[in-house]
Image 1 (cartoon, helix red, strand yellow):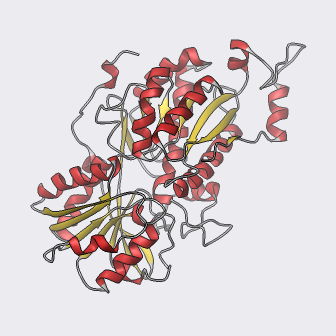
Image 2 (cartoon, rainbow, N blue to C red):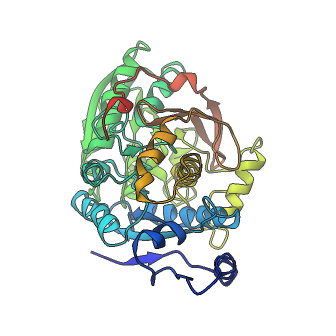
Image 3 (spheres, rainbow, N blue to C red):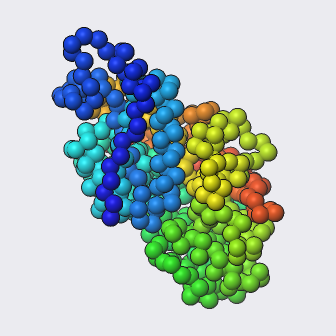
Amino acid sequence: MSNRVSKSTITRRTALKTLAGSTGAGLLLPGLAGGAFAQESGPIKLGFQVHRTGIGSAYGRWYERVATAAIARINDMGGINGRQVEMIAEDDGTDPRRGAEVVERFANLHNVDAVFGPLFSHVVIGAAPRAGELKMPYFVVSEGHHVASGALNRYTLQPGITDVKSQVISMAPYVAENVGKKVTMIFPDFAFGHDHRDFFTDAIAAQGGEVIQQIAVPPTETTFTRYFPSIPRETEVVYHVMVGPGVLTFVREMGEFFGGQGPALFGFIDSLEAVDIASPGLEFLEDSYFWEGMPRYAQPDQTPHEAAYRAAVGVDENGASIDDPRDVSTYAHMFGVWETLAVMKAGMEAAGYQGPDDRQSLIEAVEAMSDMPLSDDHPQGDKVFNGRTHQVFGKQSISRVQDGKLVRVHQTSIEDTLYEDEVDYTAQSF
Protein backbone atom coordinates (compact mmCIF):
# COMPACT_ATOMS: atom_id res chain seq x y z
CA MET A 1 0.00 0.00 0.00
CA SER A 2 1.25 3.48 -0.81
CA ASN A 3 2.40 5.51 2.19
CA ARG A 4 3.24 8.71 0.39
CA VAL A 5 3.00 12.03 2.18
CA SER A 6 2.64 15.25 0.24
CA LYS A 7 2.43 18.88 1.17
CA SER A 8 0.74 21.61 -0.79
CA THR A 9 3.14 23.70 -2.81
CA ILE A 10 4.10 27.13 -1.45
CA THR A 11 4.49 29.43 -4.43
CA ARG A 12 7.18 32.09 -4.65
CA ARG A 13 4.50 34.77 -4.30
CA THR A 14 3.12 33.12 -1.16
CA ALA A 15 6.58 32.64 0.33
CA LEU A 16 7.49 36.30 -0.25
CA LYS A 17 4.19 37.39 1.25
CA THR A 18 4.88 35.30 4.36
CA LEU A 19 8.41 36.63 4.73
CA ALA A 20 7.31 40.23 4.21
CA GLY A 21 5.02 39.91 7.21
CA SER A 22 7.95 39.01 9.52
CA THR A 23 10.78 41.27 10.70
CA GLY A 24 13.94 41.11 12.76
CA ALA A 25 16.37 38.38 13.69
CA GLY A 26 13.60 36.35 15.29
CA LEU A 27 12.26 35.17 11.89
CA LEU A 28 11.26 31.48 12.08
CA LEU A 29 10.63 29.52 8.93
CA PRO A 30 8.09 26.65 8.76
CA GLY A 31 9.87 23.37 9.36
CA LEU A 32 12.74 25.02 11.29
CA ALA A 33 10.89 26.56 14.22
CA GLY A 34 9.86 24.64 17.29
CA GLY A 35 7.40 25.02 20.11
CA ALA A 36 4.13 26.87 20.42
CA PHE A 37 5.44 30.03 18.75
CA ALA A 38 6.01 28.16 15.50
CA GLN A 39 2.53 26.65 15.67
CA GLU A 40 0.92 30.07 16.12
CA SER A 41 3.05 32.13 13.69
CA GLY A 42 3.67 29.63 10.91
CA PRO A 43 1.09 28.20 8.53
CA ILE A 44 -2.10 26.59 9.68
CA LYS A 45 -1.63 22.91 8.89
CA LEU A 46 -4.56 20.81 7.71
CA GLY A 47 -4.26 17.06 7.39
CA PHE A 48 -5.96 15.67 4.30
CA GLN A 49 -6.92 12.02 4.73
CA VAL A 50 -7.24 10.89 1.12
CA HIS A 51 -8.24 7.63 -0.57
CA ARG A 52 -5.36 7.54 -3.06
CA THR A 53 -5.45 3.77 -3.26
CA GLY A 54 -8.03 1.08 -2.60
CA ILE A 55 -11.65 1.03 -3.72
CA GLY A 56 -12.05 4.76 -3.16
CA SER A 57 -9.16 5.86 -5.37
CA ALA A 58 -11.30 7.46 -8.11
CA TYR A 59 -12.96 9.65 -5.51
CA GLY A 60 -9.68 10.31 -3.73
CA ARG A 61 -7.99 11.59 -6.87
CA TRP A 62 -10.74 14.13 -7.46
CA TYR A 63 -11.11 15.00 -3.78
CA GLU A 64 -7.41 15.85 -3.79
CA ARG A 65 -7.76 17.98 -6.89
CA VAL A 66 -10.62 19.93 -5.28
CA ALA A 67 -8.78 20.28 -1.96
CA THR A 68 -5.72 21.70 -3.71
CA ALA A 69 -7.86 24.24 -5.58
CA ALA A 70 -9.84 25.20 -2.47
CA ILE A 71 -6.73 25.78 -0.36
CA ALA A 72 -5.12 27.80 -3.14
CA ARG A 73 -8.25 29.98 -3.14
CA ILE A 74 -8.14 30.37 0.64
CA ASN A 75 -4.48 31.35 0.53
CA ASP A 76 -5.11 33.81 -2.30
CA MET A 77 -7.75 35.45 -0.06
CA GLY A 78 -5.19 35.89 2.70
CA GLY A 79 -5.34 32.51 4.39
CA ILE A 80 -7.00 31.96 7.76
CA ASN A 81 -6.57 34.60 10.46
CA GLY A 82 -3.78 36.12 8.41
CA ARG A 83 -1.85 32.84 8.12
CA GLN A 84 -1.34 30.76 5.02
CA VAL A 85 -2.70 27.21 4.95
CA GLU A 86 -0.50 24.18 4.37
CA MET A 87 -2.14 20.91 3.33
CA ILE A 88 -0.45 17.66 4.32
CA ALA A 89 -1.94 14.65 2.50
CA GLU A 90 -1.70 11.01 3.56
CA ASP A 91 -3.16 7.98 1.79
CA ASP A 92 -5.40 5.80 3.95
CA GLY A 93 -5.79 3.10 1.29
CA THR A 94 -9.58 3.29 1.80
CA ASP A 95 -8.90 1.04 4.78
CA PRO A 96 -10.39 1.55 8.28
CA ARG A 97 -7.31 0.51 10.24
CA ARG A 98 -5.04 2.54 8.03
CA GLY A 99 -7.43 5.47 8.44
CA ALA A 100 -6.96 5.42 12.19
CA GLU A 101 -3.19 5.24 11.71
CA VAL A 102 -3.29 8.25 9.40
CA VAL A 103 -5.17 10.28 12.00
CA GLU A 104 -2.53 9.27 14.54
CA ARG A 105 0.28 10.41 12.20
CA PHE A 106 -1.43 13.72 11.59
CA ALA A 107 -1.64 14.36 15.31
CA ASN A 108 1.70 13.08 16.51
CA LEU A 109 4.04 13.35 13.51
CA HIS A 110 2.73 16.28 11.49
CA ASN A 111 1.15 18.26 14.35
CA VAL A 112 -1.74 19.42 12.19
CA ASP A 113 -4.43 21.74 13.45
CA ALA A 114 -7.35 19.71 12.05
CA VAL A 115 -8.06 16.81 9.68
CA PHE A 116 -10.51 16.59 6.77
CA GLY A 117 -11.37 14.49 3.78
CA PRO A 118 -12.41 10.82 4.23
CA LEU A 119 -15.39 9.61 2.18
CA PHE A 120 -15.96 5.86 2.56
CA SER A 121 -18.10 5.18 5.59
CA HIS A 122 -16.23 2.14 6.90
CA VAL A 123 -13.04 4.24 6.96
CA VAL A 124 -14.76 7.09 8.79
CA ILE A 125 -16.22 4.70 11.35
CA GLY A 126 -12.79 3.12 11.85
CA ALA A 127 -10.89 6.39 12.19
CA ALA A 128 -13.27 8.77 13.99
CA PRO A 129 -12.86 7.15 17.44
CA ARG A 130 -9.11 7.77 17.27
CA ALA A 131 -9.73 11.40 16.30
CA GLY A 132 -11.92 11.73 19.37
CA GLU A 133 -9.30 10.19 21.63
CA LEU A 134 -6.68 12.58 20.25
CA LYS A 135 -9.09 15.53 20.52
CA MET A 136 -8.46 16.23 16.85
CA PRO A 137 -11.18 18.10 14.89
CA TYR A 138 -12.20 15.62 12.19
CA PHE A 139 -14.18 17.01 9.25
CA VAL A 140 -15.45 14.11 7.16
CA VAL A 141 -16.74 14.36 3.59
CA SER A 142 -18.70 11.15 3.65
CA GLU A 143 -22.41 10.52 3.19
CA GLY A 144 -23.10 7.86 5.77
CA HIS A 145 -25.54 8.48 8.58
CA HIS A 146 -22.89 7.59 11.15
CA VAL A 147 -22.25 11.20 12.18
CA ALA A 148 -25.87 12.29 12.63
CA SER A 149 -26.87 8.99 14.22
CA GLY A 150 -24.73 9.72 17.26
CA ALA A 151 -22.39 6.79 16.61
CA LEU A 152 -19.24 8.94 16.62
CA ASN A 153 -18.07 11.81 18.83
CA ARG A 154 -18.03 15.55 19.33
CA TYR A 155 -14.79 15.99 17.41
CA THR A 156 -16.29 14.52 14.20
CA LEU A 157 -18.39 16.77 11.94
CA GLN A 158 -19.93 16.57 8.46
CA PRO A 159 -20.64 20.19 7.45
CA GLY A 160 -20.04 20.01 3.70
CA ILE A 161 -22.16 17.17 2.33
CA THR A 162 -25.55 15.65 3.14
CA ASP A 163 -26.08 12.14 4.47
CA VAL A 164 -27.85 9.14 2.95
CA LYS A 165 -30.85 9.35 5.25
CA SER A 166 -31.68 12.90 4.17
CA GLN A 167 -31.04 12.03 0.52
CA VAL A 168 -33.31 8.99 0.34
CA ILE A 169 -36.22 10.40 2.30
CA SER A 170 -36.33 13.31 -0.14
CA MET A 171 -36.00 11.00 -3.18
CA ALA A 172 -38.64 8.44 -2.22
CA PRO A 173 -41.75 10.52 -3.06
CA TYR A 174 -40.49 11.15 -6.59
CA VAL A 175 -39.58 7.49 -7.11
CA ALA A 176 -42.99 6.28 -5.92
CA GLU A 177 -44.89 8.79 -8.04
CA ASN A 178 -42.84 8.70 -11.25
CA VAL A 179 -40.81 5.48 -11.45
CA GLY A 180 -42.53 2.67 -9.52
CA LYS A 181 -43.44 1.30 -6.10
CA LYS A 182 -42.21 -2.33 -6.16
CA VAL A 183 -38.48 -1.98 -5.67
CA THR A 184 -35.48 -4.28 -5.76
CA MET A 185 -32.39 -2.72 -4.17
CA ILE A 186 -28.79 -3.51 -5.16
CA PHE A 187 -26.28 -1.96 -2.78
CA PRO A 188 -22.71 -2.40 -1.47
CA ASP A 189 -22.42 -4.60 1.60
CA PHE A 190 -20.93 -2.14 4.07
CA ALA A 191 -22.16 0.76 6.21
CA PHE A 192 -22.93 3.15 3.35
CA GLY A 193 -24.97 0.52 1.51
CA HIS A 194 -26.71 -0.51 4.71
CA ASP A 195 -27.83 3.09 5.18
CA HIS A 196 -29.44 2.98 1.74
CA ARG A 197 -31.04 -0.38 2.51
CA ASP A 198 -32.52 0.69 5.83
CA PHE A 199 -33.57 4.25 5.13
CA PHE A 200 -34.94 3.78 1.62
CA THR A 201 -36.91 0.71 2.69
CA ASP A 202 -38.67 2.83 5.30
CA ALA A 203 -38.98 5.87 3.05
CA ILE A 204 -40.61 4.05 0.13
CA ALA A 205 -42.98 2.28 2.52
CA ALA A 206 -44.12 5.69 3.77
CA GLN A 207 -45.06 6.44 0.12
CA GLY A 208 -47.12 3.27 -0.23
CA GLY A 209 -44.31 1.36 -1.92
CA GLU A 210 -42.36 -1.74 -0.97
CA VAL A 211 -38.84 -3.08 -1.24
CA ILE A 212 -39.47 -6.65 -2.37
CA GLN A 213 -35.82 -7.73 -2.63
CA GLN A 214 -32.52 -6.57 -1.18
CA ILE A 215 -29.30 -7.64 -2.89
CA ALA A 216 -26.06 -6.88 -1.03
CA VAL A 217 -22.85 -6.97 -3.09
CA PRO A 218 -19.29 -6.93 -1.65
CA PRO A 219 -17.76 -3.53 -2.44
CA THR A 220 -14.67 -5.20 -3.90
CA GLU A 221 -16.72 -7.31 -6.36
CA THR A 222 -15.55 -7.20 -9.98
CA THR A 223 -18.34 -9.09 -11.74
CA PHE A 224 -22.06 -8.83 -11.05
CA THR A 225 -24.07 -10.94 -13.50
CA ARG A 226 -24.69 -13.67 -10.92
CA TYR A 227 -26.64 -11.24 -8.73
CA PHE A 228 -29.21 -10.16 -11.32
CA PRO A 229 -31.26 -13.40 -11.48
CA SER A 230 -32.28 -12.69 -7.88
CA ILE A 231 -34.38 -9.73 -9.07
CA PRO A 232 -38.07 -10.77 -8.80
CA ARG A 233 -40.17 -10.60 -11.96
CA GLU A 234 -42.69 -8.27 -10.34
CA THR A 235 -40.02 -5.63 -9.74
CA GLU A 236 -41.02 -2.24 -11.13
CA VAL A 237 -37.84 -0.37 -10.16
CA VAL A 238 -34.26 -1.48 -9.69
CA TYR A 239 -32.72 0.90 -7.16
CA HIS A 240 -28.95 0.61 -7.53
CA VAL A 241 -26.03 2.22 -5.78
CA MET A 242 -22.60 0.74 -6.40
CA VAL A 243 -19.10 1.94 -5.51
CA GLY A 244 -15.49 1.12 -6.25
CA PRO A 245 -13.45 0.27 -9.34
CA GLY A 246 -16.07 -2.14 -10.71
CA VAL A 247 -18.84 0.40 -11.30
CA LEU A 248 -18.45 0.46 -15.09
CA THR A 249 -18.59 -3.34 -15.17
CA PHE A 250 -21.67 -3.23 -12.96
CA VAL A 251 -23.70 -0.95 -15.22
CA ARG A 252 -22.55 -2.73 -18.39
CA GLU A 253 -23.49 -6.16 -17.05
CA MET A 254 -26.83 -4.84 -15.83
CA GLY A 255 -27.55 -3.63 -19.35
CA GLU A 256 -26.51 -6.95 -20.89
CA PHE A 257 -28.73 -8.84 -18.47
CA PHE A 258 -31.85 -6.81 -19.15
CA GLY A 259 -31.16 -6.41 -22.87
CA GLY A 260 -33.03 -3.12 -23.03
CA GLN A 261 -36.08 -4.63 -21.29
CA GLY A 262 -37.02 -5.10 -17.66
CA PRO A 263 -37.74 -2.77 -14.75
CA ALA A 264 -37.19 0.97 -14.66
CA LEU A 265 -33.87 2.07 -13.21
CA PHE A 266 -33.28 4.54 -10.42
CA GLY A 267 -29.64 4.81 -9.48
CA PHE A 268 -27.55 6.85 -7.15
CA ILE A 269 -24.81 8.44 -9.24
CA ASP A 270 -22.25 6.49 -7.21
CA SER A 271 -22.90 3.68 -9.73
CA LEU A 272 -21.66 6.00 -12.47
CA GLU A 273 -19.18 8.34 -10.76
CA ALA A 274 -16.00 8.84 -12.78
CA VAL A 275 -17.64 6.91 -15.66
CA ASP A 276 -18.41 8.43 -19.05
CA ILE A 277 -22.09 7.88 -19.89
CA ALA A 278 -21.03 7.61 -23.54
CA SER A 279 -19.00 4.46 -22.75
CA PRO A 280 -19.91 1.52 -25.03
CA GLY A 281 -22.58 -0.68 -23.50
CA LEU A 282 -24.29 2.05 -21.50
CA GLU A 283 -26.86 3.00 -24.11
CA PHE A 284 -29.52 1.20 -22.06
CA LEU A 285 -29.27 3.96 -19.43
CA GLU A 286 -31.23 6.33 -21.67
CA ASP A 287 -34.32 7.57 -19.79
CA SER A 288 -33.15 6.09 -16.47
CA TYR A 289 -32.93 8.22 -13.34
CA PHE A 290 -30.06 9.14 -11.03
CA TRP A 291 -29.68 10.97 -7.77
CA GLU A 292 -26.98 13.63 -7.93
CA GLY A 293 -25.68 15.76 -5.10
CA MET A 294 -24.47 18.29 -7.66
CA PRO A 295 -25.36 17.76 -11.34
CA ARG A 296 -22.41 16.55 -13.39
CA TYR A 297 -23.52 18.33 -16.55
CA ALA A 298 -23.82 22.10 -16.38
CA GLN A 299 -27.55 22.81 -16.30
CA PRO A 300 -29.17 25.76 -18.13
CA ASP A 301 -29.72 27.52 -14.79
CA GLN A 302 -26.18 26.97 -13.50
CA THR A 303 -25.33 29.78 -11.08
CA PRO A 304 -22.25 32.01 -11.38
CA HIS A 305 -21.03 30.42 -8.13
CA GLU A 306 -21.07 26.94 -9.65
CA ALA A 307 -19.47 28.20 -12.85
CA ALA A 308 -16.63 29.71 -10.81
CA TYR A 309 -16.24 26.44 -8.89
CA ARG A 310 -16.13 24.39 -12.12
CA ALA A 311 -13.40 26.61 -13.47
CA ALA A 312 -11.40 26.49 -10.24
CA VAL A 313 -11.36 22.68 -10.09
CA GLY A 314 -10.76 22.32 -13.84
CA VAL A 315 -14.01 20.63 -14.89
CA ASP A 316 -15.82 21.26 -18.17
CA GLU A 317 -19.57 21.55 -18.78
CA ASN A 318 -19.79 17.76 -19.21
CA GLY A 319 -18.23 17.05 -15.83
CA ALA A 320 -14.86 15.93 -17.18
CA SER A 321 -11.39 17.33 -16.79
CA ILE A 322 -10.70 20.37 -18.95
CA ASP A 323 -7.34 18.79 -19.75
CA ASP A 324 -8.75 15.38 -20.74
CA PRO A 325 -12.44 14.86 -21.65
CA ARG A 326 -12.01 11.13 -20.97
CA ASP A 327 -11.19 11.87 -17.33
CA VAL A 328 -14.67 12.09 -15.79
CA SER A 329 -14.92 13.63 -12.34
CA THR A 330 -16.76 12.53 -9.21
CA TYR A 331 -18.72 15.74 -9.49
CA ALA A 332 -21.77 14.73 -7.46
CA HIS A 333 -19.66 14.31 -4.31
CA MET A 334 -16.44 16.30 -4.55
CA PHE A 335 -18.03 19.71 -3.94
CA GLY A 336 -18.19 18.54 -0.33
CA VAL A 337 -14.42 19.00 -0.01
CA TRP A 338 -14.62 22.59 -1.27
CA GLU A 339 -17.49 23.44 1.07
CA THR A 340 -15.96 21.66 4.06
CA LEU A 341 -12.77 23.69 3.73
CA ALA A 342 -14.86 26.88 3.52
CA VAL A 343 -16.59 25.88 6.78
CA MET A 344 -13.25 25.11 8.44
CA LYS A 345 -11.96 28.55 7.45
CA ALA A 346 -15.10 30.26 8.73
CA GLY A 347 -14.98 28.26 11.96
CA MET A 348 -11.34 29.07 12.64
CA GLU A 349 -11.94 32.74 11.99
CA ALA A 350 -15.01 32.84 14.25
CA ALA A 351 -13.00 31.08 16.97
CA GLY A 352 -9.95 33.32 16.56
CA TYR A 353 -8.02 30.09 16.07
CA GLN A 354 -4.29 30.32 16.83
CA GLY A 355 -3.24 26.78 17.66
CA PRO A 356 -4.17 23.39 19.14
CA ASP A 357 -5.34 24.96 22.39
CA ASP A 358 -8.20 26.46 20.35
CA ARG A 359 -9.50 23.18 18.90
CA GLN A 360 -12.44 23.12 21.31
CA SER A 361 -13.31 26.69 20.30
CA LEU A 362 -13.20 25.64 16.65
CA ILE A 363 -15.70 22.83 17.26
CA GLU A 364 -17.98 25.17 19.20
CA ALA A 365 -17.78 27.81 16.47
CA VAL A 366 -18.87 25.32 13.82
CA GLU A 367 -21.62 23.99 16.08
CA ALA A 368 -22.98 27.54 16.26
CA MET A 369 -23.38 27.73 12.48
CA SER A 370 -26.79 27.40 10.86
CA ASP A 371 -27.69 28.96 7.49
CA MET A 372 -25.15 28.56 4.71
CA PRO A 373 -26.40 30.57 1.70
CA LEU A 374 -25.54 29.81 -1.91
CA SER A 375 -22.20 31.52 -2.53
CA ASP A 376 -18.70 30.94 -3.84
CA ASP A 377 -18.10 29.11 -0.54
CA HIS A 378 -21.20 26.95 -1.08
CA PRO A 379 -21.60 26.56 -4.86
CA GLN A 380 -23.78 23.42 -4.59
CA GLY A 381 -26.57 25.48 -3.05
CA ASP A 382 -28.15 26.73 0.17
CA LYS A 383 -27.64 24.58 3.24
CA VAL A 384 -28.60 24.42 6.88
CA PHE A 385 -26.17 23.04 9.44
CA ASN A 386 -27.48 21.33 12.55
CA GLY A 387 -24.90 21.92 15.27
CA ARG A 388 -26.47 19.37 17.58
CA THR A 389 -26.08 16.48 15.13
CA HIS A 390 -22.99 17.85 13.33
CA GLN A 391 -24.75 17.25 9.99
CA VAL A 392 -25.53 19.60 7.11
CA PHE A 393 -28.74 19.48 5.06
CA GLY A 394 -29.15 20.69 1.49
CA LYS A 395 -31.10 20.36 -1.74
CA GLN A 396 -30.93 17.15 -3.77
CA SER A 397 -31.24 16.63 -7.52
CA ILE A 398 -32.84 13.88 -9.58
CA SER A 399 -31.51 13.72 -13.12
CA ARG A 400 -32.62 11.70 -16.13
CA VAL A 401 -30.41 10.45 -18.93
CA GLN A 402 -31.59 12.24 -22.07
CA ASP A 403 -29.64 12.11 -25.33
CA GLY A 404 -26.70 10.68 -23.43
CA LYS A 405 -26.54 13.45 -20.81
CA LEU A 406 -27.83 13.85 -17.28
CA VAL A 407 -30.60 16.44 -17.21
CA ARG A 408 -32.04 17.55 -13.88
CA VAL A 409 -35.78 16.87 -13.74
CA HIS A 410 -36.43 17.50 -10.06
CA GLN A 411 -34.82 19.34 -7.17
CA THR A 412 -35.93 18.88 -3.58
CA SER A 413 -36.21 21.58 -0.96
CA ILE A 414 -34.05 21.53 2.13
CA GLU A 415 -37.20 20.87 4.15
CA ASP A 416 -37.71 17.62 2.20
CA THR A 417 -34.42 16.29 3.58
CA LEU A 418 -34.90 16.99 7.29
CA TYR A 419 -35.50 14.40 10.00
CA GLU A 420 -35.70 14.33 13.78
CA ASP A 421 -32.45 14.68 15.74
CA GLU A 422 -30.98 11.43 17.01
CA VAL A 423 -28.16 12.93 19.06
CA ASP A 424 -27.04 16.17 20.66
CA TYR A 425 -23.26 16.28 20.48
CA THR A 426 -23.23 19.70 22.15
CA ALA A 427 -24.33 17.98 25.36
CA GLN A 428 -21.20 15.81 25.32
CA SER A 429 -18.06 16.89 27.11
CA PHE A 430 -14.82 17.52 25.31
